[in-house]
Structures are given as structure tokens and as C-alpha cells.
Amino acid sequence: MKPLYVIKIGGNVIDNSENLYHFLKDFTALDGYKILVHGGGKIATQISEQLGIEAKLVDGRRITDIETLRVVTMVYAGLINKNIVAQLQRFGTNAIGLTGADGNFIKAVKRPVKTIDYGFVGDLNNSSVNANNISNLMEAGFTPVFCALTHDGDGQMLNTNADTIASALAVALAKHYDTTLIYCFEKKGVLKDINDEDSLIREINPLRYEELKKEHIIHSGMLPKLDNAFTAIACGVKAVVIGKSDELGKLGNNEPFGTRLSKSNIS
Amino acid sequence: MKPLYVIKIGGNVIDNSENLYHFLKDFTALDGYKILVHGGGKIATQISEQLGIEAKLVDGRRITDIETLRVVTMVYAGLINKNIVAQLQRFGTNAIGLTGADGNFIKAVKRPVKTIDYGFVGDLNNSSVNANNISNLMEAGFTPVFCALTHDGDGQMLNTNADTIASALAVALAKHYDTTLIYCFEKKGVLKDINDEDSLIREINPLRYEELKKEHIIHSGMLPKLDNAFTAIACGVKAVVIGKSDELGKLGNNEPFGTRLSKSNIS
Image (cartoon, rainbow over all chains, first blue to last red; front, side, top):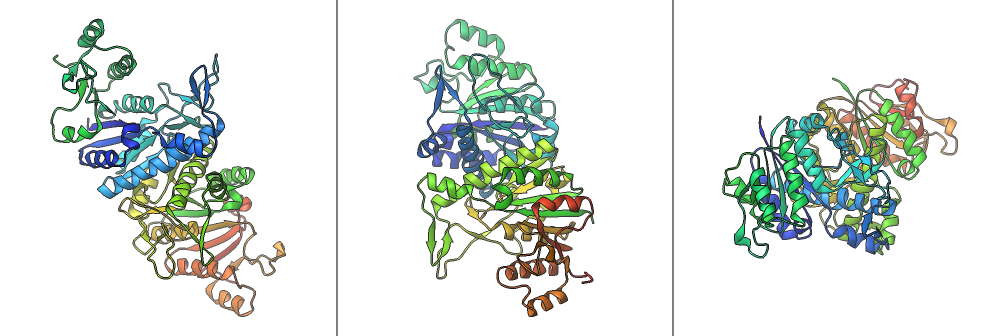
């Protein structure tokens, strides 16, 4: 199978034009099939404030009401996505900017109301990603750039977490490609000591993961991230790499990059 | 060659959810390859006002400054485009929403400053449209939906008139497809008497066009529209049809629709 990288970037890349510039250059230099997934960053919050739309919270959880959905559709699919696409085109990546509605690539289910009505939030399931359609697009020569929006197939756009989208894409496409999922964030990877960037753990396999949890080296915020990563690996993704966005170039140069999670590492 | 329809809609369809619903249903029912091009409507103006951005005019001409470009990128490529795509998906059209930056489909040149600096406005030329890339996308099973934005190939988005985009797409794709360009607007077509919808002229060829101009039946606002249409025909487009958006269904049923401009009509 041909190699595919699914790479997710968040606010620390999107909100900083210099970081974004270097990241997109490194992204272009990477060989093979590629999919970029981006979140929202601070711009959506800024535009919401300018439009006088207050962030709605219920029990501390963020709610996507219809006004917020309009803003994120404008900012994610419009402003951020098309800026990234135009930059990638400059570097020579034949990017095409997408939501899950485009090409019916990602069909979500509006989150059912239990105790909290999250509003226009879309959850993904095993049949959400149309891997054949995405594969057709890539084989036609295009590099997909997804923002954090999906649809319900019945005309409604939905807000969906970018990490979740990246993971669902990687799992679904693992049947077609030798797929590596990469989460870019602000640290060099999984650190033994969060205050020491030199304490990077290079490789983690499921056995080592259990040890790291027992030793309380991995805890709190990192746990759901790594749990999701190992779930993706159990579902066929070759490896999940967690690394710093400005070091992506190392991957292209076959240098060690971030923390590599996989079934078969020797750790 | 296979038939292709390039269909342009404007504010009277976009700003009215009922009109849009019926139009997109009729669009879906139309057989063959299709490209939809949409303008902006009133929403961009509303959002600009809400954000406190004043419309900039120089000598009565609208200027696209950087703030306005941000708004139209949000509204055209985000809000309007993705709403149309989600609706089309509901009806079964495998739509994919685009700007000219996506897939490097339409590369424009920032309008040179002569007496007026129009700002971030993109003009098109003979090599602007990448017909091969668009053809690849359509052959992969997707229906392109373009908004009125292009790029300069150097990372900059540009604002480009939707009529111009539709015409440039039709001309460029006429080498690959048997192309008909359709302008949907608020009237049934070209009328002998602008106040009488029953005075519709069914067909106009270049000879008849000259007569209609001499007789002052076609004048003022209609002249540039029809001049551009006949230019497109001279460049290989099979026919240009000007008709009412809510009558598009007639085209699918092979009933007469709007005013048909072509080289070879018997008028």
C-alpha cells in the first residue's frame, strides 16, 4: 500500500503566520499522499466577539448554537481554510479546501441531547468517512485540507472536533493506504517531564504505554489523546506521531520526529 | 463531446432560502456534467456592517480592501458556499465547494492600479482557468461549486466577479465539453419590453443581436451582458442561456427555457 500522512494542526500553528508559513512549507516537502486537518484557533472567538455573539456554555461545556455555527462556518471553512489553501498552492501543493459536506466526505450525526444540548455538534461513527470518495480525490491529484466541520447529509452543517476528524480519516483510509496519523502541537512530543523538552519519549508501544501510566509519567490531559491514538492503531493505522509543528521537516528528512506510537516499537 | 452546463446564480437565488431550495433541486435533476457559480448576495454586506467595516468607494466604484476581502472570504467561501454544498448533498449531487485557489483552478492577476486602486480584485485572462484540473475533478465524480474568489498563485486570495468566473470557466472547458453557459437572473430572459414577461425573446444569433441593438430593443444594462455572452460563443461555448432561476426545471424537461444565444439559431 502507498504511504499516507494525515496531519492535524491546531491554534499554535494557525494563529501564528510565521509558524503556519514554515509548517506549510515543510508539509509540501513531505513525499507521498497527504491530508491536512486544521482546527479553529482564536480567530473564531475574535470574530464572534466582534459580531456580539457570546460564547454559550452549559455546565462549563461549550455549546454550538446556530449563531456560533454560522461564525465557525465562515471562519473555519472560509477565512482559515482558504488562506491555508492559497499558501499551499504558492508552495506547489495542489491543495483543495474541504468540509465534511464537500464530496460527502464526512457525514456526522448531530449529538443526541441527554443532559446537555450541545447544539450543532456532529459525532462520528464507523461509517462517517467516505474513504472511496477521498481516495478518488487524492488519486485525481489533489491534497485534501479539512477544517473542523461536517454535515448530517440532510443539509445541516455540524461542528466536529478536529482531532476526532483526523483520527476518523486515518482509520478509514488505513484500508487504502499505509497510514500515519500526526498530531502537531506545542511540545516536542510526549515528555517524561512536562517542563523538560529534552525528556522526550521517542517510541511507545501498548506495553510501554501501560507501564508509563502505572509510573504516572503519562497522566491527566495526555491520557485521552494517547488512548485515542492507540485505538486508531488498533483499528489499522500504522503509527500515530505526536510532535512539534516546526519540526515536521525532520520527518521529510527521515530524522527522528516527536513521539511515535505503534504496535511494534521496540521500547 | 459530453455536455456540460456552467450555471451562475446571484443574489435573488442566494438571499431567498425558498428560491435556493427549488433551484438546487432543479440543478440536481439536470443530467450531465455541471458546474455551479455563485455570487455573494446581501449577506456579505450585512456581516460587514455588523463588523463595523464600511463599504469603501472611490469614484463610485467598490473597492476590496483587506478587511472587505476577509469578510467576502468568510461569507462567500464559508457561509454561502458550504450551505449550498450541504443542500446539494441532501438532494444527491456530489458537490464540492471551491474558490479559484482550490486545485489551482482559477489563477487571477491582481488588477493593476491605473487611476483607481481596486484593492484585492482579481482579473482573469486566457490562461487563468486550469481546465485539466477541473476536468479531473469532474471525472472523479464531483460537481464543482465555485464562489466569486480566486487567487494569484502567490498566496493571495482575490475577489473576482462571479459572471466573469462563469464565463471564463465555460470558455476554458468548451475545449473538453459541449458547454452551455446559463445565467440565472430575476427575469425570464431577454425581454422586448422590460415590463412584460410575455415579451421574451426565445433565441438570438449574432445577426439578430445587431438588429435588436439597432432597433434599441436591447440597450443599457443588457448590452455588456450580451456582448460578453457572444464573446464566449465566439470562443467555443455552444450556447449562452439567460433565464429565470425558478424555471431551470424546464431545461431538464427539454422545455423552452429563457433566451438562448448561439451562433446558429434560426431567429
